[in-house]
Image (cartoon, rainbow, N blue to C red; front, side, top):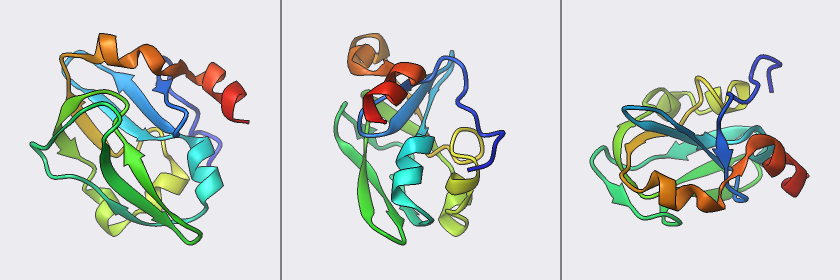
Length: 130
């Protein structure tokens, strides 16, 4: 993991290693540095189609490393408005920069305030999982 890939201020994390950064127009979802560290070198990412809708806790994709394949869960309910197309041909971007260039999807959600109650601030998440 590159040193500049520090967690952005304000991200919320799930115990299954997804992160959420809420924005005004949309929210961005990705996999945390700790989750990526545990998986190892990422070789494949399977993301949903734009327009797909998912409830909090639903599987929206898979991520495969040289060690394992893992499902990716929605931290909040929402509609996918963009996927990170660069990851299709270059999934290793996630290993290099999981918080900025290696984001997975962008969503629109009306229920973030309610859905995010189980998510942890990054420092609290780190304490829980390390």
